[in-house]
Amino acid sequence: MDAIAPPVTRFARTPGVARRERLQAVAKWVFFTMALAMIVPLVAIVVYLLVQAAPSLNWEFLVEVPKKGMREGGIWPAFVGTLYLVAISLAIAAPIGVLAAIYLNEYSRESWFNRVINLAVINLAGVPSIVHALFGLGAFVYAARFGYSIISASLTLAIMTLPVIIASTREALASVPMSFREACWNVGATRWQTIRAVVLPNSISGILTGVILQVSRAAGETAPIMFTGAVFFKAVQRGDWFPYRLGDQCMALSMHLYTVSTQVPNVRESIPYATAVVLLGSVLLVNATAIAVRVWLRGRKKW
Amino acid sequence: MTLEVRDLRLAYGAREALRGISFDVNRNEIFGVIGPAQSGKTSLLKCLNRTIDQVAGTTLSGTIRFDGEDVLRLRDVFSLRRRIGMVAPLPVGLPMSIYDNVAFAPRCAGMHHRADLDAIVERCLRQAALWDEVKDRLPSLGTALSGGQQQRLTIARALSHQPEVLCLDEFSIAIDPVTTMRIEDVLRELRGEMTIILVTNLVQQARRLADRTMFLWNGEIVELGPSSVVFSDTPASRRTYEYVNGIFG
Ligand SMILES: Nc1ncnc2c1ncn2[C@@H]1O[C@H](COP(=O)(O)OP(=O)(O)O)[C@@H](O)[C@H]1O
Ligand SMILES: [Mg+2]
Image 1: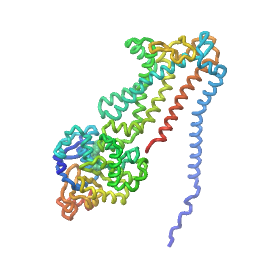
Image 2: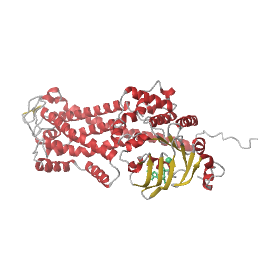
Image 3: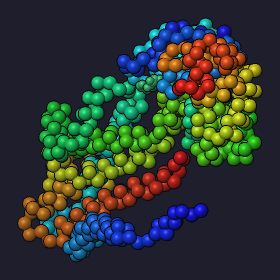
Image 4: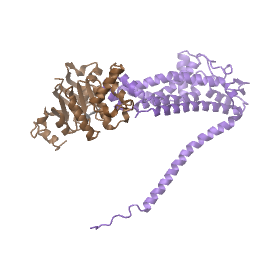
């Protein structure tokens, strides 16, 4: 009966198999090394900063005001200034950006208007910050007569972060399956009812993450605020949470870092590094919050 | 007469999906619609409940009369959609609890009394033959149900706004044969209460359930008549015979 013998060599290690396995191992190592190579600079930067900053790094440094032409004391005015700028700019950009994205993604239909807005959003997101700085100077400082002030600087930062917030919010909204919306429309739900019941609850984690990630961008930029409202020095009380009004100029961490690194002679070497650590630490803290919020909301995700 | 469709034409851009079709749907009948893929069945249903509005770039003409109203010119499409229920081909459990899935439409219509909602949820889940399986876990997620259960949940959701017409678009495409048979029983029960438009890819399903059947092909009506004629050996059109018997399509 059995004219043909069964293929007994089916699982044998032929040279071809061995070569594929070697290739597989090599590929794995290459990818692993690249992933490692990503972490190395990050760890190196953080460690280097911490070591260099160590002599100045203490609670006093955070809450004390700069003294002796920034050669002594702390960074409180700059820290609070950055808080103000970031908070105000996001308070402006986040609602506008999120609502605009909801309109674009949920209400507007495919049209030339929609395409123009899309194009604008993409291009604005790619405009260098120095250009935003010039725009802010012209639009808010001069044209709107806000002068060099916190409000001008915050508005400039808001304009800068807005397109990215719109883009990330749209992405989060688009990740909610279309079939959910259609199911809602089929039972007579209005667009708004659909958005409230299904779209927002299932995209809120993505929306929040997108917004919070803009904190680090707003906190780190120097050019836009330097042109519109940040100053080298401002006399402020130690530990004062409300030293500035909207029309005032303010200090800011990014700007202060630039100042003490390049503009002031004979600064103790640890001071710029400690400033950088505070800036980085604040941003990382906010990002960690974002991740925590995301994980928490993800845990409640429903499909 | 519940629905009167006259010379309905629909095009997506330059692509014609419905080429001037006219037919009536009688009250409390099961109206079967058969036809190969791309013949315009789904498009027809989308016109009936005006979800075609969501598609950009369509041109629509003709009239659809529903209970004396001109559907295509209605302003209040939300009330229309409550009166004409729709079940899509793929089951969709909304990402909320089973209870909320069924209570969603009544809530959207402004009903908020817990007792009323409880009654609706139980009635619809019973009608959809799902109550016994989920009555002890109404607060759990609708998306966590099996495909067949989700399709029955979808039907319960469509019943929750007490539609006068219930449209089903190839409801059995993604579910198992046993669930399909259970839903077919559900439809037989519902026949007394509402008009049912049953679009189906299973020719035998229309033969089993429909009082009258329409054969749609390439956006045109090839044949419309009592199912006993359409599925007989001598339907009015030769193409119907060929499609029903699997010779083309
Ligand atoms: N959203 C759409 N955009 C463009 N063309 C569409 C769209 N939906 C359906 N069509 C076209 O309309 C025709 C009918 O499709 P459809 O109504 O889905 O048929 P069926 O449900 O019978 O399979 C097809 O030629 C299809 O390509
Ligand atoms: Mg279809």
